[in-house]
Image 1 (cartoon, rainbow, N blue to C red):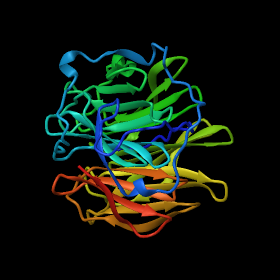
Image 2 (image 1 turned 120 degrees about the horizontal axis):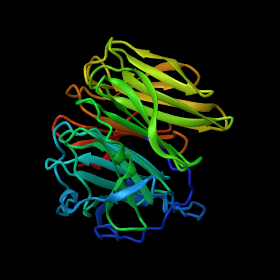
Image 3 (image 1 turned 60 degrees about the vertical axis):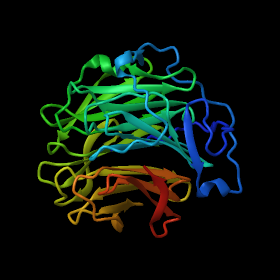
Image 4 (image 1 turned 90 degrees about the vertical axis):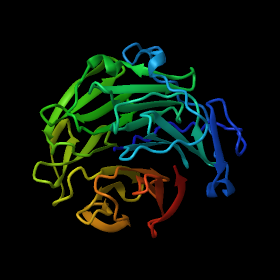
Length: 370
């Protein structure tokens, strides 16, 4: 992944869309197990639309040739597609994958179940990496991918305007390594975004956005194995940002690079000998009782998705699902201070499935299927 950025806003929009109907964003869907939830999610205003008037962030409309009108039925996922997901509220998220025509597809989960968008999105190179962030309770979304020309690109969606548009990151013309993956995080203090990708020299390059200066190159992180998966998470401690970036090093081990107290350093997490191109994803959450909790999921030497937890120290937590074909992509999501975890993955039949965990119990089959 690819990694998550949970919107720090609490405004949950109201959706009056019935099962099988379409809403104003062009979605169709069916109810799932959460449609029977006894509580309704209610929202309160309090988040302004970010970057609404900021030309640093918004670049231009996507040319007509890049806009994709696709039929209402759910398209088949491309063999080897990357997947990306971003939480937009309690039991709400937006999920992205690439179909067989190179178009990026979007699915939306509300408390009533899954819906699949039918509005135009955008395309990327075949088997493009994907990362997604959201803010303003999902009213603003940014998706990161790689163009057919090999440049890192950003596409944005805003509920306040129609269609997807190319972001100002595209003006940097940052060329990535041919097999580079992408990770991204967001936080609301000065509207910060961090995107991580491998440059042509296989070093991990940080791209930095803030509302005052726009996009620029940031720190250069260690060299990663060619085509390494990348995952990033962020949290706040004593008013300062803490970042973690996970990658496959040149010795085939999974490493952790950390940012705290305004400096980068090597972390403690180290897993030996994972397969080439093995997927890595991570989530972070905190609670008032025990502080910060890290969860890392990776494809292990047995080709299964394995879980590692850090609630003060790193521990192996067993298998989520598997084995899967080497190199299959997956992405993780957390809700409700980590009491609800989800892992979305492409199975060997090329369909995308969901594994779920509730209250640290056994993993079970979720409701999503592409």
